[in-house]
Image 1: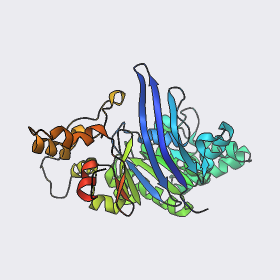
Image 2: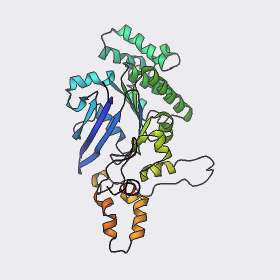
Image 3: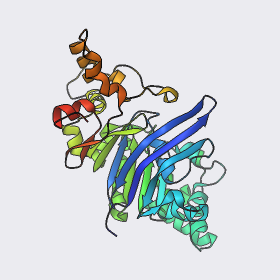
Image 4: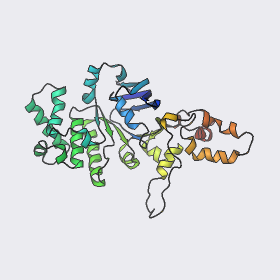
Length: 346
């Protein structure tokens, strides 16, 4: 069928806490086409992993509560499926590489047993056949000496080898969509490059789509077709990756890119984004980035002392800006940029 492989529409997720209900996702919308890699970028706590776990319905409930929205996989709303059907979706249609392989892999089972379990759970095959397929997949992800490594336990392997084992487990059933949640965390630079090259190779070979979740802008620059920037449970900018890096629109995106070390910086002080992320339990009304936004501060300086200052700045404090399209496929949520570039305030 035509259209996106995955379409998340207005997804809203809350968590019940001792302090009351906390909203983690504020109407997230995102699509991924077949064979496409989409990067999802943001600092810790912005909602990247909550989005990923929502797709596979792996958030514990309680405390997680899906308040609204849709997650459509080839037009089928995953949020409406019975658990038995979701068990078929997980692994076969959508699979996930979790953040930390040392805590995601079972310490009392060999790596080969864990990869083989995918086949015994989802396909009709005996233990011997499943074990052979597990060794084959460990070889496909370039695990050195896969037959011997299949008999080893996770603690006997390096971080890079454990990550390869996780990738083999995730890809064993050849899913249409792979969710890679921080796949290079805690790995040295050389191993990071090897893992990302491996994922790129497997993506092209298996013709699968990838949702690449990371805080590393360098990784998405090299591997993502499109990139979405998250802040405080919202997508604040999404664009083709080249366009986002060449012309970032949202002030948060601009701040992230400005904070990257560049060539010839030497000992120069790196740029930083002032302020701190608001507490999710007490998110202020209006634009969630307003208190840290350089455009809002510039406007404050300009209008300070004037009788019309409150009216001039009120929209940033009153309304959460919607995504607005500035170029084909390039969306950002910013009242100031909408007024400056889009021909009128939102």
